[in-house]
Amino acid sequence: MNPAPVSAIIVGAWLLINGILHDIFVLRSEHGKVYNRDLLRLLMDGHILISCGIILLLCYKGLQQNQAYAYFIALTASFSILVYCAMIYPFLKSVLTILLNLALSLILILAYFK
Image 1 (cartoon, one colour):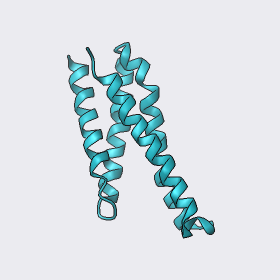
Image 2 (cartoon, rainbow, N blue to C red):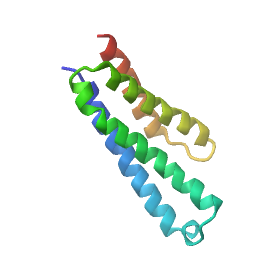
Image 3 (cartoon, helix red, strand yellow):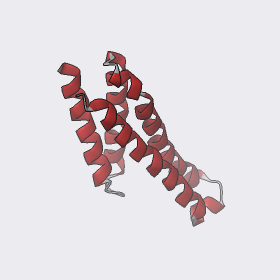
Image 4 (cartoon, rainbow, N blue to C red):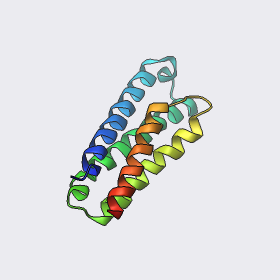
């Protein structure tokens, strides 16, 4: 059994849900009352999570069929989130997101070479 498709679904759903919640809470905060550079930056943070989450969800079928492109796309999305988490780490320590994406990356690499 290949754990990559289910892992991509779990991490993709985690990112998508967290991105949507992030944007909701930003829009409900003081930042959401005025459209400015800070609001746009905060909304882009949520957009990064949402986009990578959707990409991982869309990779499910390709991973199930053991398509090489799906592994590369999923790994790129997961790596992008790791880079994003590294950049925001001084402000927000997203340890669970880091661990989930490290695990997904490892699963994808091992499943690809299996």
